[in-house]
Length: 388
Ligand SMILES: Cc1cc2nc3c(=O)[nH]c(=O)nc-3n(C[C@H](O)[C@H](O)[C@H](O)COP(=O)(O)OP(=O)(O)OC[C@H]3O[C@@H](n4cnc5c(N)ncnc54)[C@H](O)[C@@H]3O)c2cc1C
Image 1 (tube, rainbow, N blue to C red):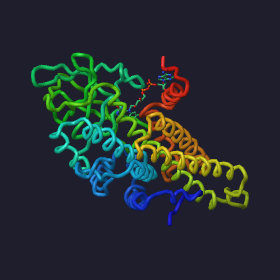
Image 2 (image 1 turned 45 degrees about the vertical axis):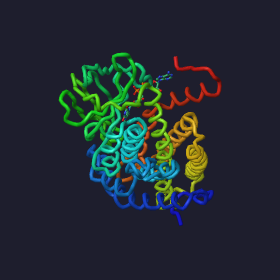
Image 3 (image 1 turned 180 degrees about the vertical axis):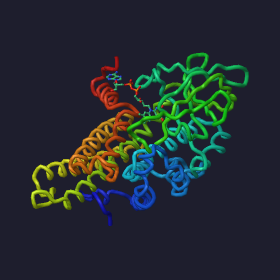
Image 4 (image 1 turned 60 degrees about the vertical axis):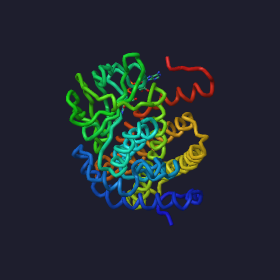
């Protein structure tokens, strides 16, 4: 039933709903993303026309209950959808991760009724776009160092400061921005596009995630009504909870990028003739392909187990760190090997490998770098923090 990688019959462990999500998302990605994504990557432009289509397919806010505009899906179904989106391109999956896990999820958990009723259905349909501003120029792996301030003046907050590397930033109708209040507590604010004192210039010259929109958010005496603060979001722990949900999707997405690279390398290797035989017939090529197959298969099972734990309420952020760290690392290795197996053709965007490879460099860095996830896991198993 499934084309592509199912070496150990992984799909037999999926529910009917999860299989349907896999099939429908894969079909949409093959029809709507794959044919044109290289052009968007070349032009460094996000294919914004796909947003409403993702909304119509129920791919935005999947784990949010239907009453709030989501699809009430399991974490497993959400993960599988992210895998399929990233088979197309990491930028498309990044869009969905941010919209779902970093904007809708915190509004759903910590927003007031008005915020939920207004924003969640619009974001779920893709009628509005969201962004999540935590990172600053001087506060990346250590977001507690943030200097963006929200100073209360009666019924308003005045935002000053700036955020850096923000996915969807320029496109966003609403940015969920984390800033320190007068007490030094980190709070979340909904900043709408067009608010005076707020601008979101795009970050240019990226060689990774070129089909994604990445921006700086600048706040210059930007007045935000008090009612735009998420009343129940307080402290870095809440920002990190959003990241756990997004990192979970990234772990699955990395499998998708790796699958796309494997499929491409296998097909190319069977057709490309050198020394009078297909290059897939050489032992060294087979070693590369077998590494890819093995790592992808391992990723599928380990990540499924993390998903089932999440669905049972037993998943921990450290479980998510394990799969985010592992999967992105191996997906990047797989993309590099696929690029290598494609020879000179592999350096063009006529093939997907180098696009996935450069995209995965960002995926390795964002949402906690590989090193930071090492430290999270190191602390978990030793009880000793090695962050500083
Ligand atoms: C394309 C893209 C999109 C992004 N989207 C968003 C977004 O939507 N919202 C958002 O808020 N942020 C976003 N980010 C920011 C991202 O989360 C940060 O880049 C990331 O957290 C790393 O921070 P940094 O780049 O400042 O690197 P740094 O923190 O400066 O790290 C640089 C290097 O030092 C290492 N390092 C840091 N601390 C330690 C330590 N204690 N021990 C050992 N090594 C360490 C890191 O592992 C890394 O190798 C995005 C980034 C990119 C590239």
